[in-house]
Image (cartoon, rainbow, N blue to C red; front, top):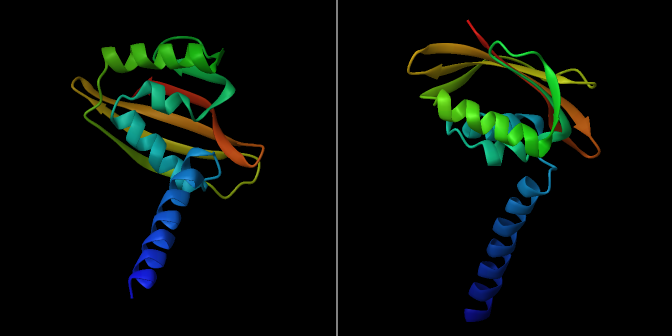
Length: 139
């Protein structure tokens, strides 16, 4: 009886731990990736969000020019944006995840002074996907 319980608990623990490995090693599906990105944007978590950036990511925040940054630079730029414009909500208004060459998501970033539009382009990167560009603009 106890052997069966131990085997069952061991198997359940293994399955549970492997589910974390799927998310952290970059092999998650596009819908899972978009949900994680949504949570990090809404929470103002630039460090966590930057883990999903490509090695070089294009950013355009508000009235700045669109420019390519390495992952570390992009993290600090997004962190500064989040500190100046803390989100109260972030919801997707449009998703196109059917194309093979890239995926597109557009959402509303709500903050105390209004709403901004966020456009995210995701591209394949090896066996996973990463954020290739992010544009935040006033509506």
